[in-house]
Image 1 (tube, rainbow over the protein chains, first blue to last red):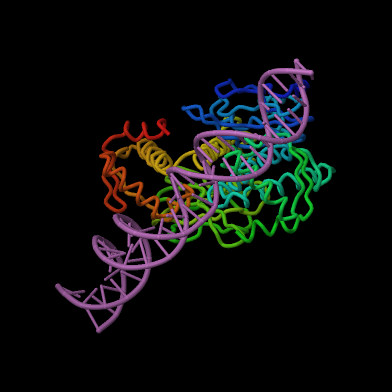
Image 2: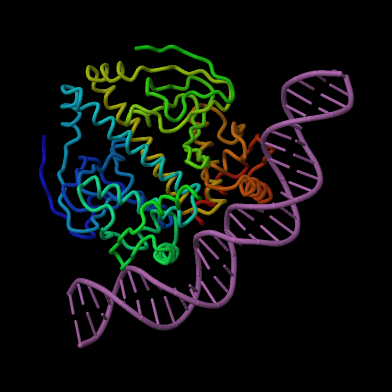
Length: 202
Length: 202
DNA sequence: CGCACCTTTGACTCACTTCAATGAGGGTGG
DNA sequence: CCACCCTCATTGAAGTGAGTCAAAGGTGCG
């Protein structure tokens, strides 16, 4: 299994829309955003990925990448040859199952975003976003209540289907309500259950 | 490979959110909608599936279905044991690749919906929806310009992140513009390229 | 130190939602 | 076979949440 490591700096493309599919990419450290492009130049961020997550699954379908992945900070990537992974998984059934689970998890994640984009209001979306980040930091042994955002308001807005001003206002409003403390990209969640209540209340 | 066929009537559940994962389901004839549920009862339609498509991929992730699938009309389903499919795919590499492509295609489809929900206006969304249906009917040897919708305005709205009234108004507007003829659920596309232009124009 | 970029905030606008009323089909039972 | 009812679709009018436009304030990088 090829496990070459490579470094990427903020703004570097891991792959672009239209690139030939070569490998999957495991994020060893750092973080990325993935986005799809519309004909007229509009772009939609489809996800923010952090250490331990695997990207590039979109390209298996047609052997061409349909989205692009860009580093949000200095990052290290392990490249995984998909052909060799497939071959290996034929010999190791648990690995095969893991690959299937990985892809299925991505499908479930996407469904959650559709729910968010299709039926939540602005502040619910941002609350869901913050809670998701919180969980993922916690899963990595980091603080679930204090972290630095790796992405701009504009990128958050694109991901959540909102304009950057709306994201900024929602942050301010959460802060006024005593739910969080925002210092530009530094976030502290003061009232986790309050944020969760934001979600269910509608 | 278990390939038991079973009939479903309009409104029947193929599976519900929370159901144990048993099989994948190939739609032999008819059509389904899949939807995810939010705590507070809101629901988001995540897709409309027709003959030849496979549903249930979401459940591989956790062995529990995360969405529900409901028949939109009388339909016939082939149940596919996933364990047997996995075993078989270890012996038949092209089958393995097909399964991966299938799951990847679902991920790409979901990305397209995120783009739609996150950055298109109401009429663009409906145009994209109609063009997508048109392509899929064409791929099945049916007319790409004349077909009957299997779903209600409310269901289309949920899928597109719009209220049913907005969907209805967009249909009426397309008709006034000479792009389509709508008779409740019967659609005739008069000006395919006009609809396509709707998309790129913004 | 200075420039470029990001963020915040306010005022105004608008696309979509909400509320409400009317109308068209389709199925069922008298 | 027709009348009734129920559901779904259309349309109008009024309301609102988020977008747009604009300006000012912060940050951090080179």
